[in-house]
Length: 150
Image 1 (cartoon, helix red, strand yellow):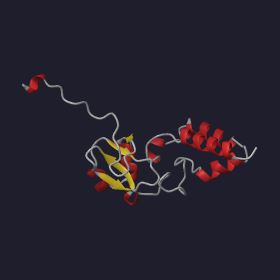
Image 2 (tube, one colour):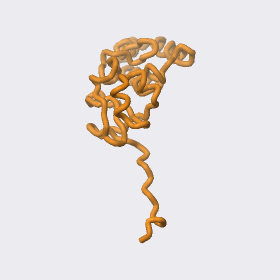
Image 3 (cartoon, rainbow, N blue to C red):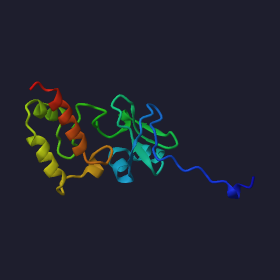
Image 4 (cartoon, helix red, strand yellow):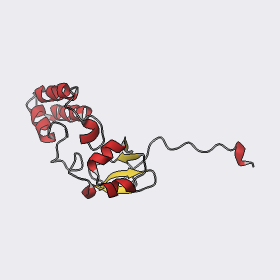
């Protein structure tokens, strides 16, 4: 059959981590530049992803199965290091969120939401996946509010 009439397969919509098979979060070059030294950044293709699996040793990877290990990024990041701030812009820790949830006090989450809308928020550069942490903070808060005794 003539190849001119054969449709090429579509590229995958989601790229999976080559080590743990979790769907990665696409990151841009600005995010990679903020978290990786130049030699490591050059190992990845133009489109790369962050692996959010806290148990996986891979931080960034691309569709060609090139990968950057967690210990090769410039600083520790959440969720790879549970002690690292869940909010890279304002330093809010997961422990802070869990404490507020246990106390039934959403003030910290509300303050973070307000700050996330300001010019001080630099999620694209500070967050390892280049995304705002608010959804993850809210998820963590709600998980621990529901677990707290009434």
